[in-house]
Image (cartoon, rainbow, N blue to C red):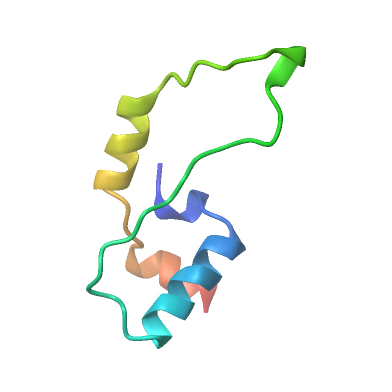
Length: 69
């Protein structure tokens, strides 16, 4: 999976951080949903390893940047 799996909101927020000259600061994000699926009261978050691996290798390749331009 590539960084192109992100959405415009995330790109916009990254650009705002860049413009504010905060590119070298750590940041925190959350993964959440608004309502438990299937009328449930709780949810189990599976796939943490996959998410962490995705973030470890998260980067835009030159062809991705060309596409976004």
